[in-house]
Image (cartoon, rainbow, N blue to C red; front, side, top):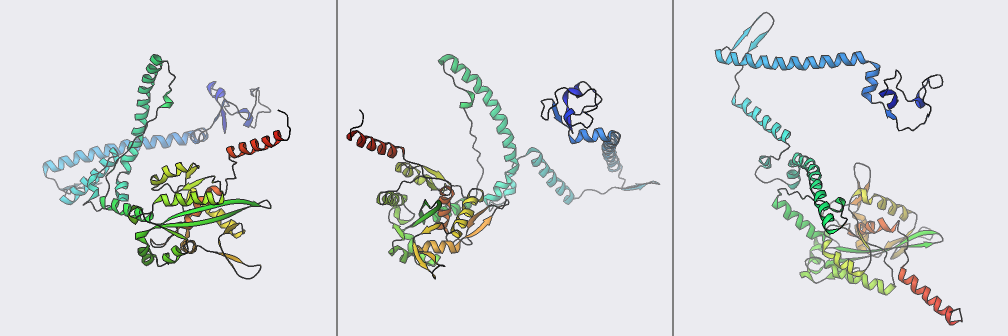
Length: 442
C-alpha cells in the first residue's frame, strides 16, 4: 500500500495515500491535490505491513528470540565454568535427578580439527588469501583464482573507499591548480586505475601461450557485402585464409584435410616471414588492400577478435578504415549467429561456389573447402541465459572461417552503407563545374 509522508509526519490516524485509499470519496481529510504520482508518496515496506497487521505477534516473537539468545549465551558460559571445575578436580562424570554430565578429554584429532576450523574461520572473517591451500604448486590458474575470491571481494570494498579518499585529495589539489593557473579542471577529469596481481602457475601460463600461438597459425580474412535486391537486403560473403609455411605439413597431418590442395587453388595463402612459425598479419593487410583497389570497394568497418589483436592494430589504423573489436562471448554473438542462420534459410546469403541439385531445389556448395570443413566442425553452445555462439569439439577441428563470418555478420546485419563525405563533395563539385560550363550563373 502506498503511504503519505505528510500524514505520517502529522501522526494522522490514516496514513494511506488518498489516491489509492478506498475511503477517499467519503473522507473529510482527503488531500486537495490528489495525484497518482506525488512527491509525498512512500511505498510501505514488508516490515511495515506486518507491523500494522499483527503487531502483537511480531513483538512476542522478537522478545522470545532475544530471550533465547540470552539463554544460549548463559548456557555456554555455565558450561565453560563447569568444564573448568571438572578439569581442576579430575571429575569425569556426575549426574543428578534431571541431567547427567560427562567429561571427554580432547584428543589430538579433535584439537587438529578445531584448529583447522578456526583457521578457515579466520581467513573467512578477515577475507584473506591462504597460500597454504596452493599445496605443492601443481594447481591450475583457475583454482588459484578461486583461492583469491575472498581477497578479491575485500579489495572491491577497499578500492571504493580508496577512490573516495583519493578524490577528496584530488579535489583540493585541482582547486589549488585552478586558482594558481586560472584553469577549469574538474575532479571528473581524473580517474584511478587499480591493477591487481596474483600468483600464477608457470606451467599453466606456458600452455596458454602455446595455445595462443597455435591460434595464430591460421588466420581468416572475411568480406561480407550487404546489398539490396528489390527492397530485400542480401549478403555476399568472400573468404580467404592464411597459414604460416612451417605449419602446412603439420596441419595436414593433425587436421587430416588437404591444405596443400587449397593452397594450389588459391584459397589459402602461405606466409613466409616471421620464420614461418606464425601468420604475418601484413599478408592479410596486403590482401585486403589489393581487393579494395581491384573491385573499388568502400569498407565500412573492419571487425576483429580482440584476443592477441595488438600485433596488427597499428596496421589496421594505417589502412584508414574504421575498425571495431568483437568479443567472443555468447552474449555478444547470439544475435549474429541466429540472424546468419535465418538469412541462409531465407536464401539471402550469396557465396562463391558451385550450384548443385535439380532446378527449383538448387543449393550453392562453397568453393572454399576450408569453409565447408569449418561449417561441418561447428556446433552451437549456449550460456545460462540461452544465448548462443558457435564452438568446436576438439582442438584439431577448426571453425576459424565460419567464426570470422559471424564476427563480421554482427555489424553487417545492422550497418547500412555510409556515404564517403569526400566522394559526395567531389561528385557535387563535378556537377557544379558542368553546370557552370553550360552557362550557369556565376
